[in-house]
Length: 289
Image (cartoon, rainbow, N blue to C red; front, side, top):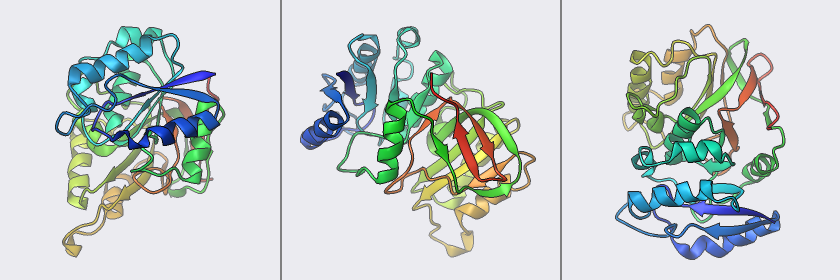
């Protein structure tokens, strides 16, 4: 039986989910273990930085661990980026799953260790119940089956084939100027966020623009921005902000990608090449090796 290790890179989570997690993955044919410091709590963090990073490094090094899954997002994974052993991770590549705050860690893993990971799933079922779309794509990811998305809305027509990167915009911007920020050159960028007003989304996109990160993209996939509503209606909405930055691009741009801080969304690979066809409204990932 394959073994999953649950780690706590970010905010703390209660142990009340433990039995649900074990039962869910047991039904899929996995045994589940929890890292030694998985349920620690230090203010808004799941234990000390040293212990959280140690759990992650050990999980990658342990030949008996097949899959690693973050327990919760919240905040904390960026504090670990200079404490991870990327040489060990590069030599012991295995599926890693996370979402939201874990975006920072996943982008660093891709940049520093060439590790393709999966965004869209944390194991805290109480906070994020597992919807049918998440369940379906999580199983596909675990079993290395192709993932394809249909029904995307075309903003700018065209096609592109490139690695898909991105995730939570706030975390992406937090990596700018650090050794853990991957180049976005010749990639397809996915963007989502939560609880950010339109002017704050604009500020982050402008930061990426000024840093040159938006200039050589191959495609743009706009996902959900949950509860990103202006307090002042005169400020407009997030989609207007997105169109201001992207509708005049000469690369394919789509919206309505079913991913983000919504009750149900897809799990997809960060760093995996995919074909974006804005004309057909599809995003099809390569087969996993």
